[in-house]
Every structure is written in C-alpha cells, then in structure tokens.
Length: 322
Image (cartoon, rainbow, N blue to C red; front, side, top):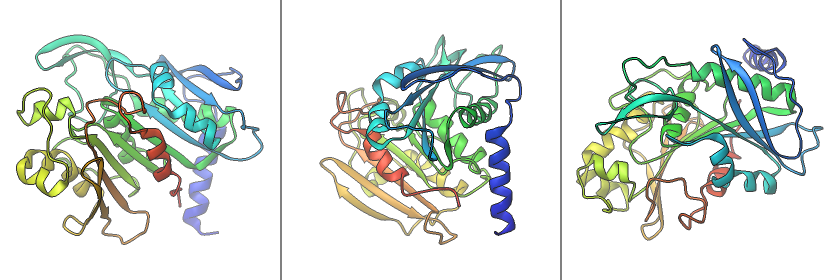
C-alpha cells in the first residue's frame, strides 16, 4: 500500500473511531427519521439522518450531507429536499445538519435567522455576532456518524442550497480530504468573488442554479421575475458580473482550464458546462448546470419539475476519495 493511501485511511479511521472533541453522543438509531445532537465549539448542534429500510450495518454505506439555506433547518430539508427518497431508493444514508441562528443584515434588513458560517463574504453578520466554527461541527458530526453507522469513508458527499451552498463550497476547500465531491446550489455564486483559496485536495465540484434565481436577478439589476439567457456563452456576454461570481472563483481555486470547457444540454430545460482540471486527472472536474425556470429554491419535483436530488446523486456516485 502506498504511504499516502495508508495515511489517508489512518486519518479517516481515527476520525470515525474517536470520540468527538467536546462531547460524545450515545443516541441509538432507527430506520427512517433520526435526530441527533452533539457538542461542537462549545454549543449543542443538531443533525437529522434518514436510515433507509435496506440499511443493515454490515457493509460500508455512502453518505450525502444536505445543507439547508438561510432561515431554514435540517429538519425542513429532511422533509422537502427529496434526498430521503433518494436515500431509500439507492440505500444510502442522508444527513441534514442545522445551522445556528445569528443576527444578519441582508439587503438593508437586519434579522435573526439561521446561517452557515462560510468563507469570508458568505454573509453579512452583525458586528456583535459571535460566530461558531461550522467546520468543527462537521468534523464532530463525521466522527459521530462513523461511531453510529458503517460509513463508506471514501464516499461522503456534500450538497447545499443558498447559504448551505456557500458552506458546501467551504467544505470543498477545507474538508476535501474527507469528502469525495461537493455541489453548491444558487445563482449568486458559492465562493467569494475574486477569491483564490488552496484546497486540501482538488476534488470534483458542481455549481447548480436557475435562470430565474431571484438573488442572481437582483444582483445583475433586473426586475423581479426576470430571467437571464439559457446558455453560458450568451449569459456571460450579457452579464460579465456573473462570470466573476460564478465560475471564476472555482477556476482560480480549483485550478481549472478556463477556456477549454464543453457544453451540452437543451436550452429549453437544462444546459451544462464541463470544465477539466489542469492536473488532467479524470476526477479533477467542475460542472456548471443552469436550469430553465428555476427560481431561488432547491428543486424537488414539486416546486419545479427538476428533481435535484436524483440529478445530483447520478453525478455524485461516480466519484470516491482516492
């Protein structure tokens, strides 16, 4: 076994077998919906897990972690995201953590809402807000999951919507030694504009958004209810600002080939741009997905014909940690 592979497996083994940094959960689980709590960074945190009927605990099982958006909760996304249904059909564990509540000022409005603590620029927290470390929460949650379930440590994935999409991108940078691939959903961009970070690992990433996303529409100065063009060439020709906040931070951070991407899809439904990494590795990729008629929401087949969880799992399952 190569030394690098041995060290990876050793670190994952320690992560999933040790007690959490600040507290140990002894809660058991049942098939279906479960709520667990733990202590991370000095506060109690919660997360929900859907255990499919086919889970036996005898074989390593993939995990998908779904991060909700602002002013939402893990339980809400357990109910509406569509991931528990995919968990049942694919026999995977699906996990729904909850963000903490903070004072936040957005669009000139100050309110107290749930928000993920992402890379700088992800939110305008009030000056007196005491932010907790959500990456510590994730590491503690990974350990807790590993203690409760037979987790496939090479097949853990993160997907997030809006604020959760920003946090999924944060995990792609900071926890890419522990996750196999990451998806961010929402048209306003997932990494801060003009940012260049150094990921732990160059992993597969995706940015997924609708051409009627209200936050994006407002950002480019269009009236509410407007739509931007379907197709990336025309989109970024018309709105270069979007190029700066959508693909450019991924290109810089994840070392992608900027000009040699391929496009596919149907502008009447979904269009895709596929970027390759400078490394040339088959798993060093970035996918952009634009969905026609999708507003600022995670599509579940009810709020929009697209079932994002099904679409996302089809992409996730081809990747695993090396």
